Image (cartoon, rainbow, N blue to C red):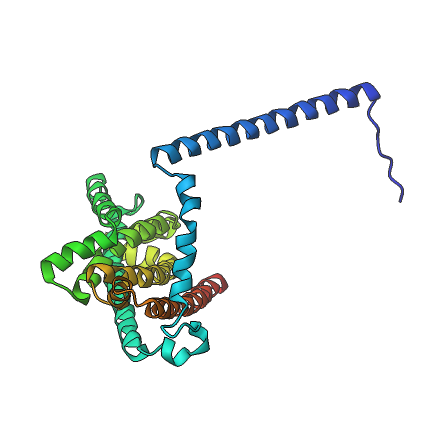
Length: 294
């Protein structure tokens, strides 16, 4: 069936085209001004931070040459030509890598437990009162604002070298980070089930248990797995200050100029993180898939 298309008069079309061109020109002008402001702020920030491009390009060769050294065996051959010599200490490195993963696991699990206990008090829609919410939020902010490696250094001074310092540092930092994420999930939960359960005379704890928790449990697990990935990398770095794990062996290799050992340990860490990322990503997908099917 043929349909007729109405054509506006030429004068009206010219007015519409002129209006459109002006609107596009204003949008492009705003974009250009925003880009110019961004570039100016970037330059000012770089000057304030003493970022010197001349220094970067002058010493960039040192950066490249260091990678060349860590990829060369003592015999002068490339590391991949003799994997046995390259990974000569794999027994010790795997043991320390396992220690790093355990530090991350225990720290993440401990932090997740405390975050689970505190997040309901930090969420705006479930907190018993404004003062409780204010205090809990400030505690969570403190826990996540201080870098984990700073906590690790403090605990190394307090408890000595070893995994204990790393576990405590990761637990405190994870409590702050997960507490905020968990609270945001709770704030986005549907409150109608809470109102229904509350109308029966149920307590605040019962409302959280039967109305809120079923909605947010999958999100909790997903964020906890994501935090575990992050903590594995953090635990590797915490070894630099003596908080246990494979980081201690890495810093020894760097300080003693054992270049092939540096690359071998880095490869071990990178491969492990890849495996953990893929595994936890698959688990998160499964969790969200199950939640969607419900």
